[in-house]
Length: 318
Image (cartoon, rainbow, N blue to C red; front, side, top):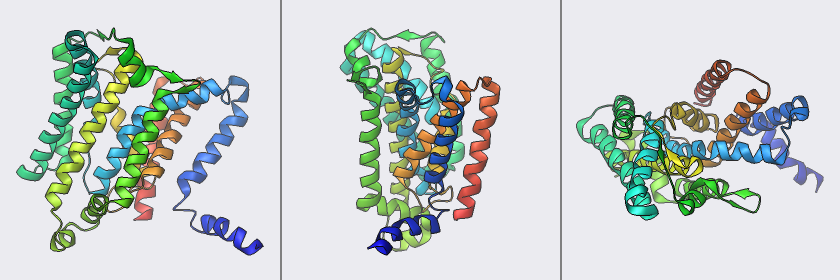
C-alpha cells in the first residue's frame, strides 16, 4: 500500500520537466507568501484580485492553446479585446445590453474570419496577418471612439460580464472556469481537439490522413478572435467603459501563459489546464511585483523574462 501511495508522487517528480509549471507555481506562491505576508499577499481579497486581473488573460490563453497547438499564432488578441470594449459600449448606448453582447460577438467573429481567410486562403503567415490586424483593430477602436472612453450605464451588463460577485466569489472566476472546462474537454475529448493536435504535429501527415488542415487552422483563428472578444466584453463590464487601451500588450501574457503551461510554440502539443495555471502564475507574479513596489518599467522587464523562459521551456520539451 505504501508503494502504491508513493508511486504517483514519484512519477510526478520523475517527470519534473513536464510538471515544471505546477512546481514553479507552488514555489513562487510560497516565496511571495513568506516575503510579502506583511503586505497582504495572502489576504483573501488580494488573492481574489489576482483572479480578477487574470481572468481575461486566461480566457484568451485557452483559445491561444488551440492556435499554437495547430501550429499558428495570433498576435491580435489584445487589440481585438480593446476594440470589442468600444463596440460593446457604443452598442449598449443605442440598443441595450443584448445589442452590446451581439456587437461584441460580431466583432470577434468578423476579425476571426478575416484572419482565418487571409491565412488559409491567401496564404499569408498568421504571424503577419495577426500582426497587421493588431494595428488595424487598435486604429479602428481609436477612430470610432475618438480616443475617448465610452461609458457603460447598464448595471445588469456590468454585473454579468465582470463586475458582479456571487458571495465573495467574483463572476470573473466563473467565466474563467467555464471557458477552461469547455476548452479542456474540446482539446482532450473531442475529434476537433485531436485534429488540432494532429495538424500542428505534422500538417502533411494530417492531410494524408484525411484532415482538412486549412479548415482546422481557420477555425482556431476564429476561435481565438471570439475569445478575445469575450475578454473584451469582460473588460468592459468590469471597468464599466469601452477604451481602446484595454487589452494593450495582452498578447504577450496570453502567449506566455499558454507556453508556460506546456503548449508548444511549434504545434502538436497543448494543455488547457496548464495554460490556466500559467495565466494565474503570471497574474501572481504581476501582483507580487506591485506589492514589492516595483515600477511599471521593471514589471515589463519581468514579463519579458517570463517570455524568454517560456520559449526556453518549449524548446526543451520539443
